Structure formats: structure tokens, C-alpha cells
Length: 404
Image (cartoon, rainbow, N blue to C red; front, side, top):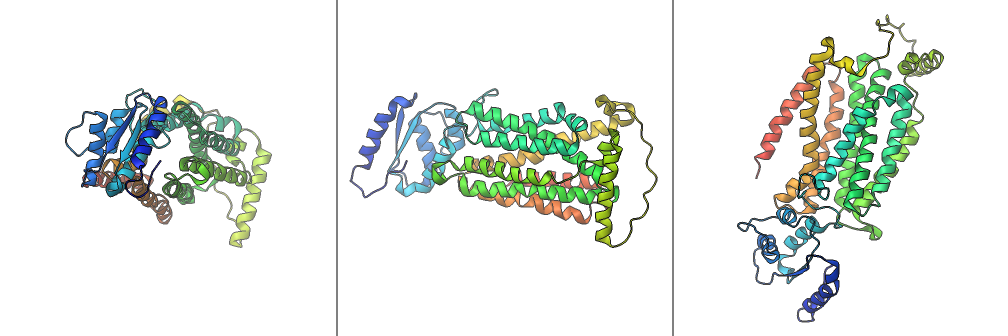
């Protein structure tokens, strides 16, 4: 709440009286921070820390450090005479008390009230979805699983938008992450089975580019809405609702896609697989205006179900370990950077709105470079396409970390 008006009309008295009436709702009490004597906006955080009795060194304390020290303590903060340092005061409040659901940092390793725990809940769900539930796509079909996993995530996001406690936020974020994990594995299998190997790289580039369009889209809505409350509803809740409703639209479109003919054939449903292939071939012939070339010889396959531990047998072991290590490191760099950039920028003294703006601009690179991959995805070996960008990402990450 902000009280404005000419000097001498009693704003401070009204604020103190309001704090006195609200005092029973705050276990740690209320604190009046007097800012009239400040001439340097950079001193606002240290003044707040001093008033709260926090042990901080120097004057370079940030709102994130204050949030870490406060933890989950419930207190009321009154900033008085802050007109001349309004920007610094405004940037402090959102970082500390946005909806009072999560703290800017996680106070303890097993604490469930910080933003770090919220991010960890998503990746825990992703891990569970990919490891424990990836088999469902082999059992029930590619199209069925990626359609309903998307619906699963949409429902969880919608429920998440109406939660009011840190524990419920963590739970529904984790459950929604399971749906994403199943989705990611299933889509990759579906594309690789449906697209000819000569153009498979290009198909994956289009698929990733289309998927990555969601990254700047969400960042844009966050930039516009997170610090506001349209119709009295917090902006982050609007971001979740918009995302879940958009996913439902995509789910409707996906139902028009065919099942994987390869999966159908492996299940002995040859007539269905043949019908889908005939329909696809007819569409392609109509597009190119000539009959298709006869198919090449089919590769020899073992007619038996695959086993999970088969990837660790001698013929596959080295490749499996290499890809496990590669994906582990890539996930830290890719998802870690994307999730922690806003917090990092705020810790450097950049206001929340400006931090979200920068995040949006950075997010534009995701779909742009994915679509650029269309031009060379099938022209060079996959291993070099993995190695070169990874080295470039590492170099750029080091350079980014050295910026001041």
C-alpha cells in the first residue's frame, strides 16, 4: 500500500495507526523505516536492514540478502518519507513481499518456501516423468500420451494459479513437471518415427523452434503482468492461466495428428499403420506433383521388446554414459541460466521490471537460433552440432559471469 499527498497532512500518523491495527497479523511485529535523511537511493536496503536489526556488512546490501536474512518471518515494513528515493523503495518491496508466498532465496537446504525450491519442484517432476513414466508412450501410443500429458500439465498449471501456500505451489509444480517430462520424451520419439531420416534434423529444428516460441511469449507476459494485478488478480496467476488455456487449444489441434505408424506396426496393428502411411504418401504426392520413389530396403530389426537396461550393455554403454554426462551438464547450463537470470539481475541491483525485460530479450534467442538450425541440421554430423554450440555456450557463460 502506498500513501501519497502533500506534506503535513498526517500520512505518517495514518501509516503508524494502520500498522498498529494490523500488528496482530504479523508475528515478528512492525518496523518503521525513516528515509527522510537519505540522499543516496543505494542506501535504502542497508537502512532497512539496520532497522530490522539484521547483521549486514557495509552499505552494499541488496534486497535479496535482506530476504535471505528474513526467511519466512512474517513482519510488516513501513517506509516513511521515501519520495526522493522512490525507485529504490519500489524495487525493494516486490523482491521481498510479492504475494508473500515465496521468499527470494531458500533459507535452508530442505526449506520449501523459496524460489529455488519452486524451481527444483519443476525439475524433480521432469525427472520423475522421464524416468518413471516414459514407458507409457510405448504401451499406449505416441499420440495418445503426448496429447494427454499436455492436458495433464494444463490442468496442473490452472490449479497452480489458485494456490495460496508455498507447500501447495511446490506440490502442483512438481505434478505438472511430471506431465512435461512425459511430453518431452514422447514428442522426440514421435518425430523420429514419423519423419524420414534424410530430413529428421530439419524436422527437429522446426519442432524445437516452435516449442521455444513459448519461452519469449511467457517472458513477455511476465514482464507485463507480474508486477501488476489486472482485475485484482496477481500477474503471475494470469501468466499461469493464459499458459494453461493456450495449451488446451494446442491439445485440440494435436488430436488431428496421426498415430506413429512405426508404433502401430510394432504392436501388430499393420492395417492401421498401412492406412496412415497411404494417407501421408498421398498428401506428399499431391504436394510435389509426382509419384514417390519406391521405398528402400527395410533395416533388419530384432523382433522382441526392448529392455530398459539394454542401453547399458557393451554395444551401447559408452554412448549412453557420454549422453548422460552431456545432458546433465547441458541441463545445468541451459535451464539453470534461464531460471536464475531474473534473480541474478535483481541481485545486481537491477529493478524487477527491468530484470523481466532483460529476461524477455534473452529469451528471444531461443526460437531464433532453433529456426536457424533448419539451414544446416541435415548437412553436418550431429556430434559437431552438439559440440560446437556447447563450447560456445560455455565461453559466453564465462564472459557473462565476468560482467559488472
